[in-house]
Structure formats: structure tokens, C-alpha cells
Length: 315
Image 1 (cartoon, rainbow, N blue to C red):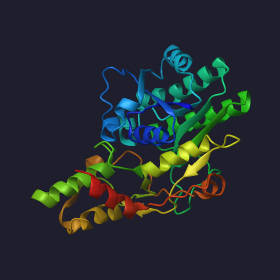
Image 2 (image 1 turned 60 degrees about the vertical axis):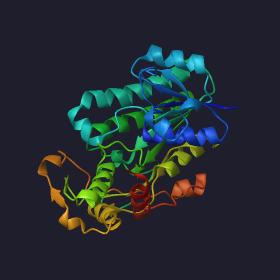
Image 3 (image 1 turned 180 degrees about the vertical axis):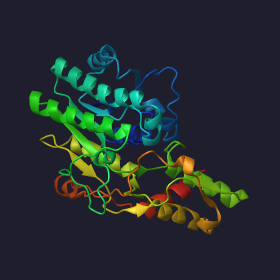
Image 4 (image 1 turned 45 degrees about the vertical axis):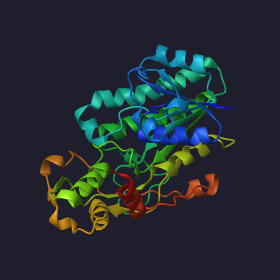
């Protein structure tokens, strides 16, 4: 039985990944800063909380990291931890940089020092690319991060690449484009939209949003965690862009959500300048061709499918 350690198991991706790995017969361990106090609500929602062995670990504390690695002795580590909101990173840049870049470095160094044959998956981000216009970004597209979150993710990406080359570690990064699910917290605009639309359908009202013209490549989170697992099953470590290859505007996302309840979005949406970010990406689209060719992975759900699935499930 393989052992997997998921750092950030309480988040959207961590919970779906835990569910996937349990289904494949893994012994699954998950970390939280304080496992005794954390609710692990997403694991509870998926009905798997009792099957995941939870450990307390702070990625910013090297001693904490190496102690957990020695105690658990994992075959695979999935680094999904760290501050995960682009918007919040403008308000908490230091916390964002430390939780992502220092945390990743501590994991890499701990793996190196244990001398064990541990495979590491690192959660990269499409935000690292910055604005690429209508061109779909692939593994060779240069980074131009435009937020503290993206800067931190870019640093973590290069840390992984450096340790892979310098110390021959099996370490790889998945450069994931936006992927959504009902497990998204409310601070993410997609979950805010879905929850608000359902409330408006019942009792009326409006939703306030920022820049509606931004375009994103939205996918379905349960599919994306399978790509993470596939990366660690390869003979050689490598980095992959994970995306649908399709881009849509936030306005399209909103219109699709309102159409699910038979309403015209234009009657229920207001623009709020306070929700605009200091810098934002106008358009973001990925080219997942390498993932298809090497991992045999392809997204089955595109934006409209994702919205409908969220509208069906979210309450």
C-alpha cells in the first residue's frame, strides 16, 4: 500500500485528491497547521474524513516538516498548501510569499536530507504567466507574474526545477489553470457567483462584481487532481500545463449561471470598482497538449459544464 502525504488536505484540491487516492488504495495522510483544531469540512463533505490520517505541520517550520516526513515515511507528497487567493495576496504579500515559496523550499530540503525515494508534486499556477493575450500558454511560455501570489508560485516553480536538476529529486510542478467546484470557499468569485445566483432566484436582489471582461480557462477540479496523480506515476519527473484549452469571460460565466435559473444576468449584476485588483490578467488560456500526449489526460468538462455542475450541487 502506497502512502501519500497531502499538504493542504483541507482545501478544495486536497480533499478531492484524498478521495481519489483512497479510491486507488493509498494510505492517505493530510496536514494542517493544527490538526486537532481544524474542522476538515471538505473531507467531511466528501464523506472521507475518518479515512484520512491528519497530522499537524507548519510548512514554514523546517523542523515540523522533517518530523512529519520521518514519522509518515510517504512515497508521494502533494504540496497544495499555502495562501491560495490572488486577491488576498495583495493584502497579505509577506504571508503569501512565505507560505508558498518558503514552504516549498522546506519540503524539498527535507526530502533531500531524508535520502528517501519520495516523489513530490508541487501545485504551480497559471497566474505565473501573466497576460498572454489570445495565445495559449504552454510549458515553454515565459513567466510574467502580476500579483504577489503569482510571484510566490513562480519562485516555488523554480525551486522545484532547481532541486530536480541539482539533486536528482523526483519533483514536478503542475501549472494549473483555474479549476472550480462546490468546495471553493466564498472568497473565490466563482463560488460567490453561484451562491448569489441561487439566492437571487429565490428572493431577488443583485450581486456586485469587479471586472467582468477578464477571460479565464475554467475547468472542473475533480478532473485536475487526477492529472496531479498521473504526474507522479511517470518514469521521469516533468512539469505540465493542466487546462481545458478554452477561454471565456467572467461575463459568460455569470450569464451561464443566471441562465440555469431562467434569469437575465443584466438585471441582477452591478459593477463595484472597489472589487477591481491593482493589477489583473485580461486573458488567460492554457495549452494542455503535452498533458494529453504524455499523461493521456484531457479535460472532459469546460466552463459551461462546470457552472451547471456547480449550480446543481451548490446550496
